[in-house]
Image (cartoon, rainbow, N blue to C red; front, side, top):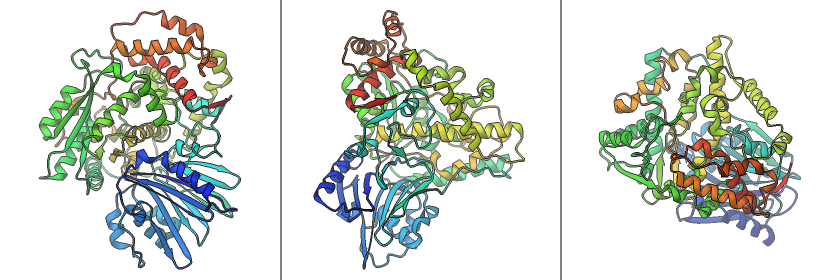
Length: 612
């Protein structure tokens, strides 16, 4: 893992003290992603920076190859799953470079040029500078597991792993327009949108080439509809083969490895398969998160029917792992200092997920104290149709994003405390409608698809392109701030391609969520977990957490210098604060308060200019 930044200016030299100081500053904002080493390098029209998890020579952090009059440099973040095959088959061309993943990308570029994207597998974001063509190549992995942000102006381009890397350059304004605010207030992740006005994401599965001839972007991978010819038994066995292969490649060479477990199907099967593949190795380190008294005092809510702890215990006892249960005091999560750290990690207001952000921050901090790399079940629900909305007729038939309907909609609505006239000016309802229609129009289908299969393809596609990216971003930022690398086997593009094309009658053959996964892993996952209904990441129910949030909300409402104040509905806040706290604090009852407190922190901390 590492952080990467860069700057390309086709019509002027960046190799001077002023601009190298700027690239140094940009790179230093990402030392948390790679605290072991740092390198910056400039060559006329380009300046690059990289941070590395491990200490090493400059070429180990960022390889630079000198080939006569030609110079090629690579800055890389991520994991190549086929690195061993590439390292074995690619010529070294006499290069005396360390055998790092970045140097393998450099060798792949020398062999295939920009078409190297067709030969790489894994999760990554990288840049290649080629002095011969005076071009900068940017690449992001197929599912967007690794982030890459860009700022383009006047033919010049800046890039960075995180938004903070771009904001460190004085040329990038901290301006947010109505378009960015819509992204903040609605859970509809528009591909390429990054909230700040002049910042975009390089979309998953895309490459960008910048040269004196201009800047062009090309999509090199997309989800495609294909005929599924496997019967049920073959589909189940093929799914298992893919899981075994991806997990085996992801854990290869990672001795200091862990796995995050929740007692749910996804993390359990990954942990069980990884343990089996490791054979006689030391027991896998596993980690679960809980809140003080949460299990003993758990109250079921509309999406969380059971506490995690009993299922976690059965898994670790069955599989045989070295387990760590990390218990977080709920009162700690509302600490204003922690919220500031969360915001500075995200570069954005922590919308939609409430106390998940501070709990993940603290959880990953504890995980990193024991391992450097951990496995995660992230993306399984999007890939194998695990969410309740895939199986709720009202959500399936709704003409909007399924997570905004039915029982889950209130979890993604943080707007109750915002001024109604302000919200009206953003035309949010039309924005959501247009965004949804765009996603439907993109969805690949087959003429032979039944009406049910066509609709379920749409459901899968919007989840894979408008929902999962928010979760992958959350996972990346909350882990990388602690220099922890999280591997997500379900985000492998081969698994996604295969699962997307499984007909619905097979994907849900027993009428349950993730039917194929249950059948494919029943030999390694305890029966109680196979039968457990989907339960999301845990959320505290402790009223003391909400009480502290309300105290902060009251301070914001009574401080005339609060930057969020012009956006608020003061009467709604007064009404909320006068309502007594309940004995249990459900997550969805706090969403408005969470958003206001987080939004105020972000506006103040980042000195954001709103132009709505």
